[in-house]
Every structure is written in C-alpha cells, then in structure tokens.
Image (tube, rainbow, N blue to C red; front, side, top):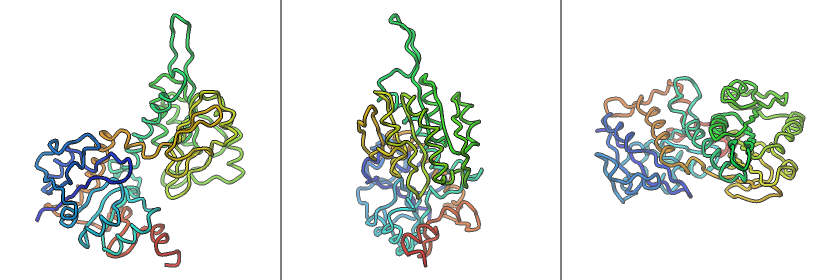
Length: 377
C-alpha cells in the first residue's frame, strides 16, 4: 500500500500557511505516495484546491486523519486532531516542544511518532530541512518592510528639488538568519544599517552585507548556533554600550530568541524613552515575550517617542513563499525515509533520531518529557 500523506487546514489564530504547496505535493506523488487534503487547506496561502493536481480533497476531517499514515502540519496538532489519528501514525511539523504539555501527552498516549521541525540538528546535510531558518528568513525580510512602513522617515537618501534627504539609520539586534535578512532588506531600501550580536563570529557576516558591526566587548558563543545566556554583569555592560546606538537609530529591529526560554530583554524602557520622536521598534522575539521591555506581544503601541510593534507569527504574513519554503523543508526531511512508497525509519540516523519528539508511547525529547512528566521521570 502506498504511503498516505494528509494535510488539514491550519486552525491556529492568524495562521495562513499550509504544509504543502502544489509543486511539493506533486513531488510526493512522484515518490509513490498518495496525498489527501482537507477542502480549502491552502486557501489562506492563496492556493485553491484546483491548483493541486492528482490530490484527493475531503471536508471530512475525522476520516482524513483516521486514514493518514503521515500528517503534515505547520502548527502543532490540537488534542482533538491527535485523538482522530490512528495509533502509530506519524506527525511532522512545528511541534513547539517546550510548550503545550497536554498535546505532547496526547501524542505519547496515542503512541504517535512525532517529529519536530524545530529539533532537526543544525548540521551540513540537514540545511535543506531547516525550517527554522527558512521561516526566520521570511520574518527578517518582513521586519525590514514593517520598519520602513511604520517609520516617519524615508529609508534611502533622496536628492530632491527641496534638497537632500538623509538616509534613515537602522539598528538590527541579533545577527542570526532573521537578523541577517533584516539587514539585507534595510540595506536594499537604502538605510544606513548597524547590527549587534553577542556572538563575535557574526561580525564577518554582518559586514559582508554592508552593515557596521557594533562591538560591545562581550562574546557569548553557545551551542547549536545559539548564544549562551549572559551574566548580569555582561548584560549591564551590553546595555550601556547599546544605549547610544538605540537612541541614535530611526528604527530598531530585534531578533534575539532562545528556543524554550524567554527572549532576553535587551532594549530597556529607558532606551525607548530616549529615542527620537517618530522612531520605530520591530520586536521579532515576541513569541518569547520580546527583546524590548515595553513590547506587548501581538500589539502595536505608542510608547513615549516611539512606535513599538511586536508582531506574532510573522512568516504567516507572507504565506505564499513561507508555505513554499516550508513544504520544501518537509520534503527534504521526509523523502530520504520513503522507500518503495513506504516509510522506512532508520533510528541510527542522526537527523531522524534527534528530531523525534514522541515514539512508541514515550516522550524522547528530554525538556518536553520534564514538562509533561516532571524532572524525576
């Protein structure tokens, strides 16, 4: 029997992405899989059912889930959706393994094999599967546009009959994938860009994009491409040096996030109070509470002289390309496991082993297990 893949309509608030775009769905068909989708599953990403070729559509969500071998998701499945899956089915998607203990427990109890795209190891051969990076690139690009849109100033230098307009100054905090894309976007828009990251190794990448690297004299290289948490003394020194750059900026974009932990508070209330009138902060770390002390996740507020916007689920604001990139990540992750139209899981493979969340009635990701079962389990 061919492997049965299923895609349902995403139900999380403001989620417009879909797990499969038409081109990637066809690639799975060419591997011998059957693909079934819920009616209008792609509409939020501007894909209508007719865009998908040789795909079965249904409005019966329960039947679709109950018949699936593999469920492809963007957001984690709900407890209700998990209950509709047959025992032993496979789920692949963003599983938010540091949150929603009730969902993780339901996956365990239903003996669902679940793979979290967040947990895919950041090694060379898994780069094409790295959904965190693909979606961060979307978010960083959009952050640059949001900053320009909300700014009260032109980003580029303009020479006009009324005289020359000086370019805006942008500070990007965090030079991961999102930060680098924000830098590149703001540079394309003509702004003067500075960037800061606690990882000194990012200096070369920042400068290669034409931005100036802000060196505060603190290095915090960590594991897995993430920064370690700063000491209180390092945080104080960081803020003292950054303060002058924040208040000089017309727009600040913050992107510093650590999976499973609150976002570090880098931009203080005092810094915001001292910014220029009409300045803008775009806080991309809102899911973790934000990098700015005054950010309100999901809200755009006026605080003193500045507009502070902490949008949630930014990739969903560009659902066409975000879905396309995410679907490719899913295909690149799953396709090596599909042999003779069946799923063959090699648990000695580092990518498969390290990305699994639940399997055979157990929670294998230690932080998630502690969240659900307690530290002593």
